[in-house]
Every structure is written in structure tokens, then in C-alpha cells.
Image (cartoon, rainbow, N blue to C red; front, top):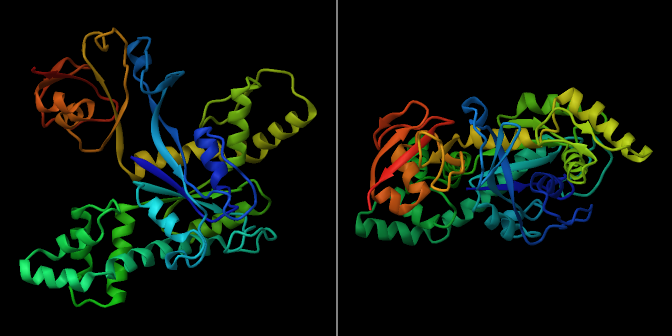
Length: 393
């Protein structure tokens, strides 16, 4: 699973990525600061079972902070988008190709309206963020349309000769975009698409396909800029997408200060604790973040966006596989060693394959470690389950 961070230049896109991953990237107000994609690991928050079970956990693939488990998720920050990207303008082809690897997209929008359509700085309020939201969707849609129409006639003739389904032909044409056959079939059924459909009808099909295969959440960035709150409320009322107010710069500052032990701060917290005496500059900066971001919005929004996209948009759950269901440990006696993300609706057998292909192939049974009850391969997992898989040799 990969989360893509996208948007125009100068919206705070790379700042958001850096705050979420603590990967050092070049951050400036120049167009195309990001050329090659920046890749890193961020974390989604989940309640760790350690406190309720009264055990001291020993995380291996994740980390636990005060009973909160931070589970790793891959993230990529791609080149800034410009109008006409689907026609190859700017770094358009590279941008659109890069984001097709992602399971979902975080669209970082300058909610203060202080960057124009090409990403150039302008006076706050000069640009309408609604246009940015629409423009990203349209660029993706027209780019996919171009791919779809390329060689489509040849494929349709082949379909007529081989009697293949229309959905299979479309899947072949869209191979490499991370779009699955069931998503294509669903979009065909909803739009009644046929080989004789017009470009407008194909575009409607693509809109549905894109919304299901590449869901988007809006990071309404720079919420701490004056008058941004009013713009946010107006945009929130008209967009159909999930939109969350955030200040990526504040989150990055807090995480950096925590890293240097100036403050104690955990991603997603509504406040921080000062650990060292601050100079005037540090005190002014932290006071501003507290009064203009944390108090009015209860967080910087960065971690909330990551949590929302994983749990609410991608419908994932966290499951804890163990070997010893009595002690909640692996064979090295590490308690609750791993936290794995699975799609809601996954089964115990799916978990077995997630742990290791051989364990899935040799699955015998499983045990719900909380209850001690044996469960079948078809058992549907719940968020927070602790499962011991029994496999043969």
C-alpha cells in the first residue's frame, strides 16, 4: 500500500510529506522543487492492546507510544502539478505516472488562496482553492482518457474476434495503473458504457473509476494563515471530498522540536509539553502554533489526514498476529510484536498469507487470543484482533 502526496507547487506539499515522514526534502517556493519522487514511511495510529491486556509490548514492525501503536505506511511525494499536465506540460506525464502506483491520494491544497493555478505565490485570497480541487481531478481524468483511447479500436476489433469481455479489454488498456477488474466492471455497470460510447460517456466512466481506484482526501493546508478559516468553510460546503484543515509547517516544527528533545510531542496530539528553556524565537513560534492551530483545530491535521485515509477511505483495520495465544508473543517471547494493516472484511486465512505465503498455504486453524476460541479460515477479522495462526509443515 502506497499513499501519494500530490498538488501544485508551493502549496506545502513537500512540507506535508516531510512532516509525515521526517524525511528531509528540499522545501522552497520555486516551481518544480520536487522533480524525482520523494519516498518515505509515515505511520497510522491505532490503539495498542498492551494496556488492556496489561502486558509490556515489544514492537518489531511498528512502535508503541503510551498505548498508541504507530503502524508503518509507505508514502511518496511527487512533482508539482500544473494545468495541462495530461498533455505533457511541465512534469505532467511523470507526475501522473507516479501517482498511479498509489492506493490513495492526499491532495495538499493551499486553503489560504495564496498560490495561482501554476503554483506561483500571489496575495492570500487571490486564488479559489475550489479550482485547485477540480483541476487535479480533471487532469487525472483526461490523462486516463488519453491512455484509454490509445489503441482502443485495435483492442475492440480483437475483442470481437476473440469474444473477450469489454471489461477485460479495458483492463488490458489500463494495465499498470493499479486499477482492478472489479472496479472496471462496477464503473461499466454504473455508466452503461459500450464500445460505441462517446468521449463524454467514457469520461464519466473514468470519473467513477478514478474515485474508486484512486480515492482522494483534501489537506486544507496553511489553515493558520489569516482568513483561511473562512475560505475553508466555504470550500467544505461545496466539495464532495473529505477535507481536513491542517498546518503542515506547524506539524514539521513540532516533530523537529520533539526530535531535539525541546518538547515532548506525539503525532496527532492536541498539545505538547516544553522540556527545555526556550529562547524568545522558539517561544514565539510554539505559542503561535498552540494558539492558531492546536487550540482551534485540536491538532495540526497532518496525522488526522493519514488516519482518515487509511481507516475511513481505504477501510483498513489493524490486526496483531502472535504465535503464543496465551502470552500474546512470538517464538522469541516478544509481546504483540507486529501490527498489520488489512482490508476490512479480510479473513483469518488472509492474515495467514499476509504473515507469510507458506503459512497461508499450510493453514490449519487459528485462535482468537483474546477469547481463546478456535476460529476458521473464513473468520472475518475485526479491528484490534489478536490472532494466532496454526499451520502445518
